[in-house]
Amino acid sequence: MKNKRTNTFVISLLLIFMLVFTACSYNGWGGGDAAKGVRTTNEEQEPAKAPVTLKLLTWADDTYQELYDKFNARYPWITIEPIPIEGGDDGILDQILALQAAGTPADLTWVVGDLLRFEQHGLLENLKPYMDADASFQGKVLPDGYFDTMAFNGRRLAVPFVDVPMWIVVNKDLLAKHGVDMPPNNWTFDDFRDIARRVTEPAAGEYGLTTSSDFVMRLLPMKAAADGHAPNLAYLNERLTQSLLNTPAVMEDVRWLTEFVTKDGSMLSWSKSAEQGDVVKQFINGKTAFEIGGDWLLPKLQKEAKFEWDILPFPRGKVNQFSFHILGPLALLSGSKHKEEAYKWISFQFETEAQKWKIEKGANASVIEPELTAYIDQVPLWQGKNIEAVKMTKDNGLVLPGATIPGFSEYNWINVINDIVFQGHDINRIIAETEAWNKQTLELRKKWKR
Image 1 (cartoon, helix red, strand yellow):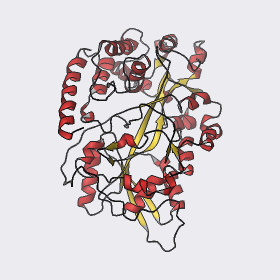
Image 2 (tube, rainbow, N blue to C red):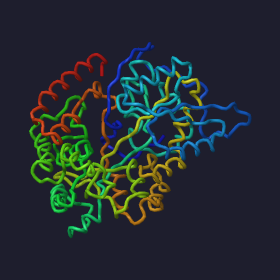
Image 3 (tube, rainbow, N blue to C red):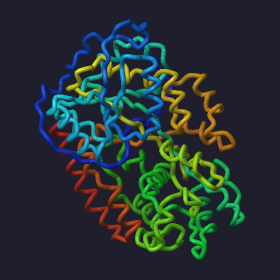
Image 4 (tube, rainbow, N blue to C red):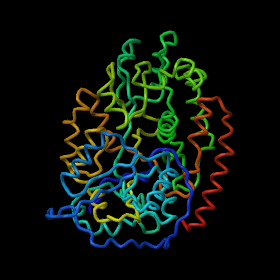
């Protein structure tokens, strides 16, 4: 496997909701799970294979049926059965254990963020032997350390099944109504705030920002990174061992976003939004100028938006300009009765056919090759849009860390800042919460020899 593109912060997590309990026997932290009989995805199809149905725990919508069908066309004897995830990592664990108890174990799962929760209960297969034996990866060029970001103590717990870049989504009609031109790609955070103020017209129910916690989860840590206040998107230090959330510069960033609600009036609080029927909580309603979006929002806008929309990169900070990425963990469960077939689904994610499908839906290609880079220009989703902003995400990405950080699911920074920004809570709450988590994660590191 070749590695080429350096991405300093590719460590990954996916989205936000966390927790979990449960006990299950585990046979050690060493690195077992030998990949017996693993075959490469390049093998020719053999006749008369017994039908296999793979149970995949996922929160994907019906759109993913297209990818399941593509996989089934490649491997006609294998069918993907999506099982909707209920809740976060805690809900996933409950579902895994319930299916095992019923004698119908799941084979694969998406993970919200805390891989160590699953690993300590022995639920994850070590993917490294499978991938080492998979000839289909040998000629692929991938980002440096791409698979290592979901490794723990020599075991590869999961792989990123998708690279989800994000952008500032713009209601161009609302900007035009207020005489504001589409900003250039090198716009700044000052430009962002100024435009949000200029397009706000409370009498018309129009505001600069959608009342969305994505501005807390995405924009705020992006500003901290771009201004040099934090080295990554989770406010962690370089070694990912301690939170910097309670440092003066980061707390000032929180005040900055809070003022969109308390001073500028360009974003409504949760209570004010509710008073107006929560119209401004949904960008597609056309009453807000800016939202943060990725592959979960853009196809919906393409089909349903009644206004002209486009995208912009995240604004440039005092130090740099970055794009926000999430790498979604996909794991093979140790209780699967069809490990060989389940691994084929994992390997298929990196085939050109699957990579192109993900580009069509607004995601990035994980594999680096000219054909996939050129394919961006052919995708209907981006026709007439700011395609240069799409291409920028290939080179300036920061990836949300957390999947193998001890105690990360208890790192409560998103809820804390949501309460401060949208409900007027005391900003000093950050200090005690951060100190408590910093102590907790150090204790867990000692326990797990991390």
